[in-house]
Amino acid sequence: MAYHIAVTDDDAAIRKILQIILRKEGFEVSVCDSGNSLLDLLSLNAEDIDCIVLDIKMPGISGLELLGVLKSKYPYLPVIMLTAFTDLDTGMKAIRKGAEDYLSKPVRRSELVSRVNDVIKKSKVKFAESEKQQNNSQQQKILEEQLDEAHHTIMRTTMATIRAFSETIEQKDPYTKGHCNRVCELALLLGKEIHLSESDLTILEGGCLLHDIGKIGISENILNKPGKLTHSEYSIIKTHPETGEKILKHIDMFTPYIPIVRNHHERYDGMGYPDGLAGDRIPLLVRIVTLADAFDAMTSDRAYRKSLDLDTALLEIVQNKNKQFDPELVEVFINSKFYEK
Ligand SMILES: [Fe+2]
Image 1 (cartoon, rainbow, N blue to C red):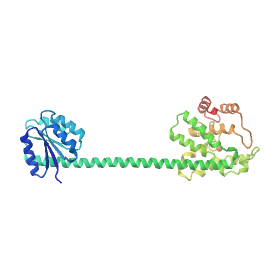
Image 2: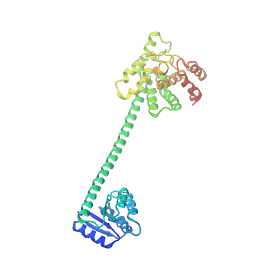
Image 3: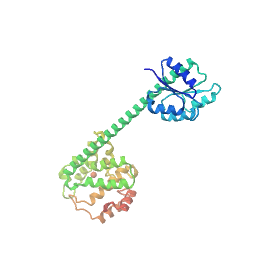
Image 4: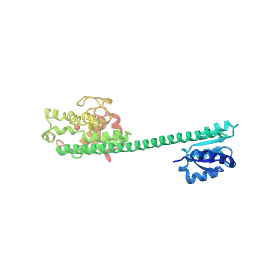
């Protein structure tokens, strides 16, 4: 199919010469006698035009002014400017303003044909590359959306699995019914109060629900024993953080929650178990769970004792600042009055 050239010049003789030359070379040619007439043609037919040959000096809207309009409305339509033989500066100015090329009048036949062919070829390549880039960006966007969706699906599955695990522990130990959920709510309130990131809050939530998962491995007789535990029974209870870690470590999706599961019975003074970590060596998320876990344990009935009243539990928390609990978290906890919510 022949390429379509729009020749725009106010000089009828030049329009005619260019039309004859280009038609002879097999191009389809439309002629316009002014900038406005070119804009009219393009508004009806821009897709069919492959190249514009445009005189710089015309009455009314000048070629250079028109060039700015063309480049913003039709960025992939190549423009060759026609300049006076003595006016190379204007030609260079046109190139800087976005023209693909310029020709000095009088235009030589071979030069016109080769320049027109050249700019059309280059603009087609440029257009194809831009289309390709646009397709790549669209493809990239689709992939990112699919990845995002997959991530959400994985997170939904992970949380559903964690909740199922959490309910398994509560089934085994009726006294802890609702404990994991309450610890979770309290820990999340604390976490939000200290402006944890969304991803940390997600880990905190899962960690709270899973923190006692290791109790699955402990006999119900010990878990639900109404009286005081013997030394050896207490030693068995103390194995649940490590048992929890052993259960979870085989499944990659549980990896982020393992520190909470393993270390939620550490104490700020280093006297906890299983690792005897102290102070900031206990990860922040773990310190939050320890506080929420202890507060809920104190304020709930257990097999071996009745719940403490709120004031006694709060006093216990405050008295254990720097001993069992992170002092800054205790401050946040007391000042924010989460326990009243
Ligand atoms: Fe525990």
